[in-house]
Length: 189
View: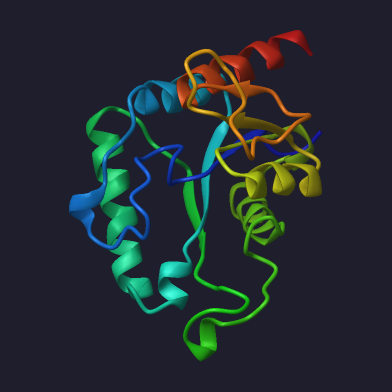
């Protein structure tokens, strides 16, 4: 086997609080347990790559430059808690909405595999030994398309699946619980 196993994590609702179309660094709020979860994964020899659809760019709410500033601030805040991600990958496109050059059907918008493939090439990842953690059906569909294991974040302390949950994938309350699941699954292999 070549390459490292990775955990691909969604951004909004997984790493940070969902606010709709995040457009200012002041809106970043790292969710409880996230820095600890990232560090657990890295100590367990996983690379951590953020994969996020950001149609706010396509819709003209922010520029790619402003989005990069938001991501640098996210990395700075995580580092302040001792947590580091290996890369942040985003899709600025939308297939039907937004500005002309961004209004395209692309291979990077989740559930497509483009962001995961780019991360795999950049970071020398073995996608087949990797995981996808997110709170949307597109995250789980991307996991299925790339041959990774998906973990659905349901946000419910009892682990109940809300309407719209994706069946066939383990459900966890938050990134901390999901990271413990991943490390346990790795130990079972």
